[in-house]
Length: 202
Image (tube, rainbow, N blue to C red; front, side, top):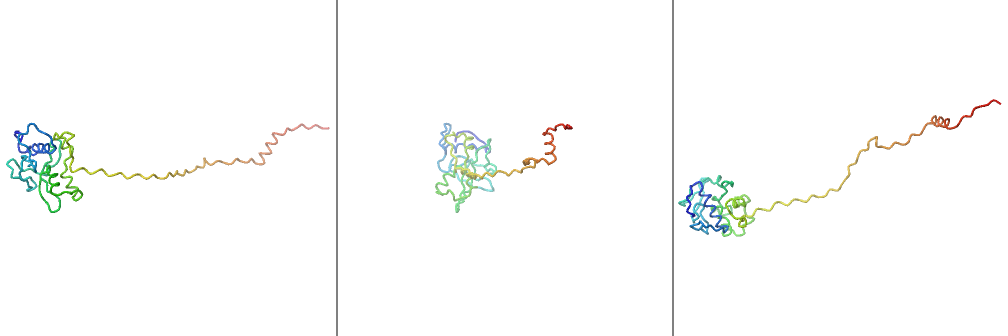
């Protein structure tokens, strides 16, 4: 495709980058053979068929090689390409296509499919923005498909009426009534206040 010799373990990643750039409209100066516009092969970029056998990719493409799908489909910064064969989960379909080709398959074979398939399948065929950026797709060309679901809306917190906590009044906080002096005390106070005149014998 670009004239570069790539060994089997790296071909899926290398060809996947070419396919994704073609799908996003990114021109490649080094490309000698254009990527097919109809279900490009993940091993050569042509129009070869693909299937799954014993959990591995299986194709009659001369450039194909068997690889374990469960390992290759995991996104890693060192190996970001997740273009692997996937079986369609739509009812009465079961067709197998390369992951990068599912947008074309769903639009042609299952128009109006949104909301009629399992979320696990949608996650399986989604091409994340991180994967596209790692495969050198310009930011303005990044297209996350299928779109990620919006985050759940947070329920508004209902305002609770303020109820002041009843404070227990301690015994020391209770005002004491003034102590009434006793009769003895009153008499003593009066004796102190009334002067006592000396007595003279007449």
